[in-house]
Length: 268
Image (cartoon, rainbow, N blue to C red; front, side, top):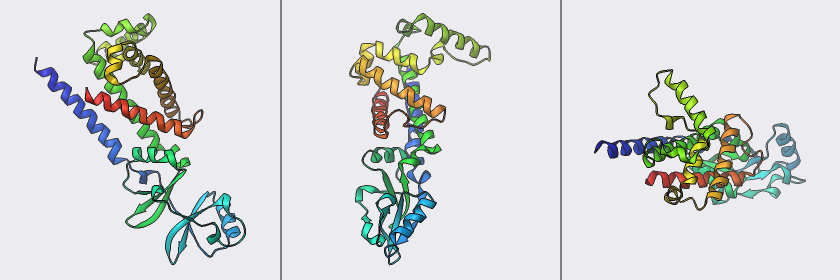
């Protein structure tokens, strides 16, 4: 009987290792672009034409060979770039080693971030860069990690296949059909291995005590969260824009909620 807790600890440890991979090894540098620059004395209209030509919204401004601020294309008029100069705010600056997941949360308050390499500002990240593959890989990985935790919790919480009471006959039948297909390929699995995210959602939300353990305030709020999460996962899987139907801030809030639920899963 002592084997079960040891296996559970091993499972949680492996999930934390995977989580660490997302948090530490995928950094903001993986989606950043080199910050092109102009001189503070350059004519603003000439620089604006250049920015339109190369499709830049922002450009760094150099003074005495050092990037000290930036300009925005839409702000530029007559005169020199100095007249449209914006100083860097400390909250807009991040280290090149900042985890990408943490970067997403910083974007809740900014449209762009500037990257510090040593003591020099050399790169920039904008909201458009959040459509890049590393972000998609990160988000899909976080959602997959949550699914893994939910499966572990359901398997440990319910004796045998007693979780079936929370699913419709149709959903159980679909799981059983998938189970038979995978068994025919000699895969060593259980029926619960064939549950989809929507099944895990219903099992967790319909079990009041499990909702309480995971810090899910109510069934309705849980359904709203999982609906948005499934939409995001589907957009990721089909290479759709990440904010097609919702604002970026709604997506950032969704990932924050996912992180909180992951933390509760890790406590079990």
